Image (cartoon, rainbow, N blue to C red; front, side, top):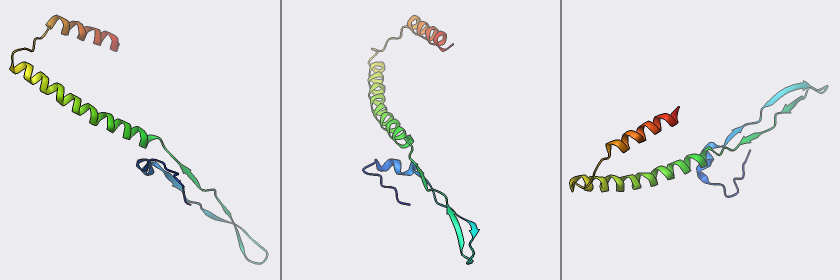
Amino acid sequence: MKVDMNGADPSIVGSVSSTPHAVTPALVGTNGEIASTVDEDAATLSLQGDRVKTMVTKALEASQVRLEKVEALRQAVQNGEYKLDPAGIADAMIRSFASAE
């Protein structure tokens, strides 16, 4: 069986599954020939390939942003400019815990 992807993203080709046809002997004719039934071919396309590609793209973009944030925080700590607000941190932790329940 041939599946025409018609411009589909090549990254989803791995998520295409195919069920090959099976020939099952069913009847023996009067002349000794074997009649058979052929199960229909089937193909399933999955959107998982697109989802994975999207997540990988987001992760790669996020890592660059995170590296910039880490470097900015490193500079602030080295320069003595990074100040913590213990009360604000505690409040945020309590709100986060309360919303998780």
